[in-house]
Image (cartoon, rainbow, N blue to C red; front, top):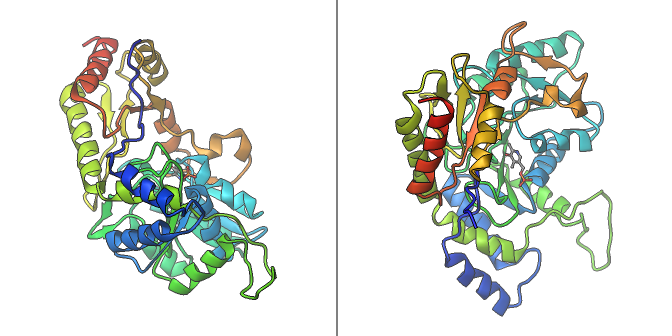
Length: 379
Ligand SMILES: *Cc1c(COP(=O)(O)O)cnc(C)c1O
């Protein structure tokens, strides 16, 4: 049996089991429970935010955040194009209309220039976006000073999709706390995991209370089942929250690991012509959730060829996200490239490749990945 090297597998500490056992022994095998409350409180303290709502997924957190911002049928919502579909699909659940915005070259995150053009384009039609959803791509914060400046000017709320960016910072603030609402994910491939889960965080305590109500089927506070609004079954289970608590204890260690892995890739591959890395902007600190390389014109292999070479040696890699404006699902939606006639995300999709970056990746495994890439690049 050859050992397969995965992109970003779960990495347990062992401590999670004791917490899960405690949940079993107290028979709190339910959605909600003491571990859920504690997980929320611990996350608030870690992030420096007033409220947190533990949910069944990051996607549910995006959905509920949009509901709380009052997004409804026909509303324009501005989204990063270079992202995972889960940051956009909830816009469509609500019958709203996604408008896509490109990345900039310096950070690969939402281009403030393109964002401004999108808002002006809507304004010319007498419309205003109901929300903007910047994504902190691959664990790197978007440029919130510039995004907030634009959104504050037009009075548009920001829903920060920090699903990939727990542990990263923007200035002295943690990712997840830079918008009116922030979204976290604890899916199996993220920097910490519950096996599946998410969180909506905010300083708006009242809104989060309403979110709590909506996420538990919107049951009115009377003895019988009384409903005035459509609710959701979106809360996190107590068992999964126990796992999340064990994981949150080691978040700083996980960030340090992933950053070290990134640095070792730079040491091992940084001299290759035609190969470059996702940059890090001076305003923040990435958690380096995934190390992403870009293969330029001089590279003897394309990302898909390199992916195949890695796969032959049982190493998993993935192209960078396919932008939403190129997805058949979103064909025909408005799209604003970084500059007129020049799309950064198209190029990143064609040239980008994500390398194994899990915090449990051993040095000998990483050395093998580096060696395969060097061979493929003819070095
Ligand atoms: C993972 C991810 C999500 C969705 O999170 P789930 O917990 O898997 O639903 C949303 N947005 C981005 C950018 C993600 O990477």
